[in-house]
Length: 272
Image (spheres, rainbow, N blue to C red):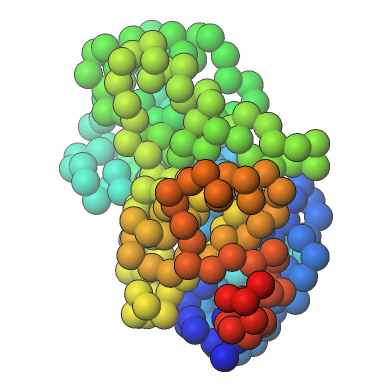
């Protein structure tokens, strides 16, 4: 039996698994097309909060993966859904949002009023997502808002993300500055927390033992899958991951080099 035959629902990371930068990872497009053409459920999960679902859908379409706009969950959309469920009377509340325009629009759709400047120092919510223009004033206002009792949320804790230049600082690296300054820890929506997994699984009627997360990070994708109680497949996209795997207590159910290896016989995988 091939690895692909074990599962009906595939939760798949984007950065480093489907593409790096604007280029598709070899074999990824063909594999996704096979899954979609064979009645498999494919849901893309990304911790990256910088783009909205439409933008991710357009990027996938350019790579040759079409019709996926309803099967993309970002940390921003998961966080917005969580806030709408957990809090009432949001139209009467304010939020200071640090992050991309896409994140701000997602939070605005919850009904929260977005504020800046002096008003932001007394915001009811502080919501953080990494962005390239992050600066000291945002850190300062965020720290004051938390001291005034703001609810503290973040899209994710990824310290780095892959680019063609190599791994560069991501949301978690910037978030750490606010957590250190305030002495408070954000509630995170991204992997390895279960918020995104719950949203994915609640929209599709699949048994957990037929559901798998495929990703290239132990501390987000694989740990997240374990926290959610589903199967895990680690893609070795970076030689450094092999050394990390030896040192880590987090162990995936299966290890492959790329998505094409989903078509390898399970016995052959075990014997490598």
